[in-house]
Length: 318
Image 1 (cartoon, rainbow, N blue to C red):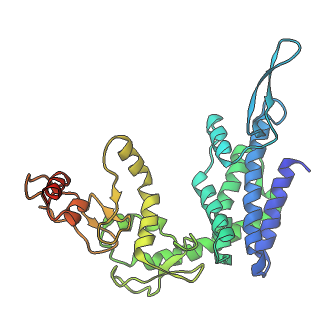
Image 2 (cartoon, rainbow, N blue to C red; image 1 turned 180 degrees about the vertical axis):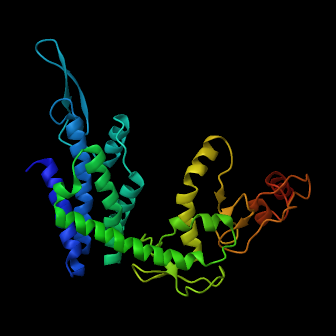
């Protein structure tokens, strides 16, 4: 069986597992679809290889032959992993929605390693993420027709699963959009809300009519667990503001989100001067009582109105 045929068969088996009314097959569905997507990535590298399957090797190096020419030979028997695939796709200008790929892999990881083994809703999310990645690989990278490659039944099932998941996701999101969020950062991060326990995006309000952030009770439609707002926001902020934080630190500035000194979640919004999860807020006139320098949230909370330098001096005097 060729690498391409193996990839398609893995996806087809995964979809068949998902369609079966058997919760024991849910994890198998995610595993097979994820494996199939990974094999499609490798098939692209195989087709890009100038000679044989050299780009599938984890390591390769130049080797001289008896004629004085140089050839590129694989070193060892290991094949490329995800990190290598990402680097080689970038080097060859192959575009892929890695955020969705990683989200699918993250769901698989948590389903395999957490005590709660998962639900059909989580599998639907993983396969829905996979659909767009599969289509991108088949159509853009491999120049294949998805319906012809996977078969009409499998491709239609993938599309229907994506529609079902999207409908449930929009229902959950609608309950969050009714809340009068106390920070702009929280409202901006809504698309990245996910369950801290199972990583499903199907997080919703228990009471859809509630509009108060302080009264909001969050629950996951996938695993059924309640989720505290702090961890949900902290996880969402990492996705929403991660890029900005990286650039800020690289340029010697402060990241947009930091640890709240009161609730200890990564939810303190510097630009807004308050925590998005609890009621801690930094007064606008917060300044060191000795030198008048503006205080950070940590200094204000921990040093009794002194900047770090004068708090250090005061502690030495004690």
